[in-house]
Image 1: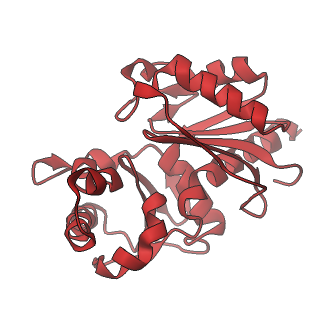
Image 2: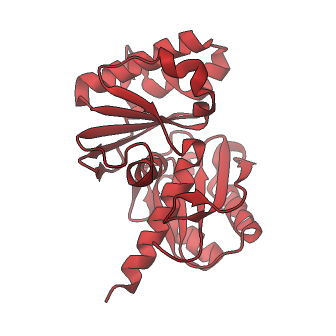
Length: 254
């Protein structure tokens, strides 16, 4: 994963982030661009924005694209927090056509998880690790002895008749005006539901809300260990860059 920085995108329901990433060090080189996600996150508008952001961050080689969807062979198969027209769309091919470069396309929580397990809070950790990204929704990534089970989408697990992400995402906290304790109680319910099903050894909590870890981290309770994401809200673009680096490595192998 050596060489010049990789351009990586992390598309969310509220914001799109882009940066140039040293995938070997897990470090963003320069500033992270942050733009509001176009209204309804329609495919054409999002692709226009990604192409424009790519022009602001000149680079070469493969590009990483982390996206809130079940991602299989370049195609988006779900669209919980973006326009439904993404479903069945080959996002990888469309962005490659726009920017003229190879694109590594993966689920956004999986990208964050890859970053955390490779160089972050989950580095060297065995057993079952569950990475959660608390943002517009709840993204989940599960690793067993370091191996990813992709596209788990457990933010949609029902907890007392309501989807987990409709109960305990960072957006829910803001929309409902919840205090830290009240919101942490909701997150704890979700953690308990995940633990009852999967018995993880470690929860890694990520997303932009981790900037306020001092306010709620101590309020989180589980039978599993709980730690904040090392890379915070940059985990998605760092993991996407790692996917792009792997794409280049695979392309150059004999």
